[in-house]
Image (cartoon, rainbow, N blue to C red; front, side):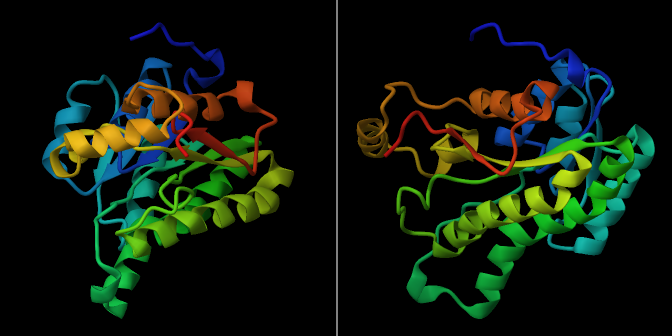
Length: 250
């Protein structure tokens, strides 16, 4: 693994991450902690959250189901009461469960939007006032290149992820006067443990490599590094945009 940059502007800053216990989220938690930031995260999995928090000094976490907006807002309030108003918010939590379009019910559709999109807006609504008091901040929404590639097999997920870009751009406009930047990070097929367990096969990897410009598979740490950059003052003039971490996948 290469040596990565240190961003002095992140030292001591409060960073809140949703879905932070495992996968890309856990790498984001670790990456900000390594910068000396004051990190808090939300997750539904109590055991995995405690295990991650036990490996990193001074990382706070709260357990909640992000589909329950009141519970999420209460959990965010607990984290900011402990750590201070957030300078960086990372809306990471999502689930890319596969589903056949023929089987989707209205209830399933709504649940997928609640799981992959709705909580992002309400987290912004809860956190932005503190950023305004701070004089600025950075919000990073996690997208997906699945819909850019016209990927099939999970239409409720790809619809939600496509909508993330609209959320990013409109909130960048609404919050820009407060020097709050809002961006989307767009991962490709990232080799998390979940992906390896559920969907990685030799045939799928071979087909995916053929679509990438780069030959290497994407480790979650590289997505985290893009998020860290966007959270730092080095990205002070970056807003309302997409930042691709997909190895040139087409």
